[in-house]
Amino acid sequence: MPDYRRAWHCGGTYFFTVNLLRRGRNDLLTRNIDLLRDAVRVVQRDHSFDIRGWVVLPDHLHCVIRLPENDADFPLRWRLIKSRFSKGLPPREWRSQARERRGERGIWQRRYWEHLIKNEADYRAHMDYVHINPMKHGLVRRVADWPYSTFHRLVAEGVYSEDWAGSAAADALSYSD
Image (cartoon, rainbow, N blue to C red; front, side):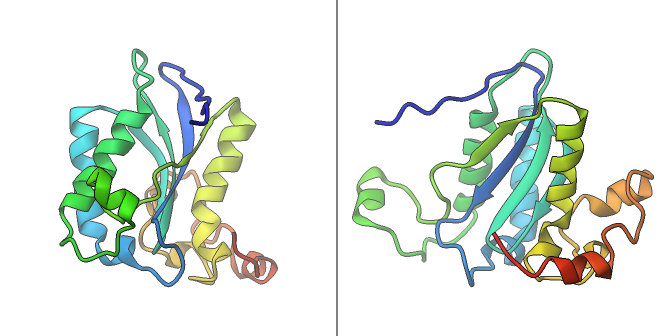
């Protein structure tokens, strides 16, 4: 089994990318946005964390969160969010034999990408990446047009302007990850 190295840092600020198992032409997350929001809200209530930035796309999500000063257990939070969301869906997805043997659903990729934020420039770069992602994927022409994002809250707080990364940036972002 691979030795995955995690950056455990109590009170750390982390960037995450979490994917559905079957990316591409899958809108499960946005179609079930209320279920996902509920899962995040319940886990956040029971295992505190501060949401700095979050965007939900049809088949994956990105976020920047900060953990409490005495806590570094982000895997627990992701396990609970994924589990709660999955349990709220009817079991209709295709599952591999391995997943069936383990009693796993076929909704999420098992792993996720995490990155411990190192400094203010790293933080700003990851926050910008989170918020520009719907435009990057060609889902909208303006960041402000994507409804499933903390961008709107951050505009209200004065962090971003409403026209941040306007249509000129959209023309330059004709690729996807």
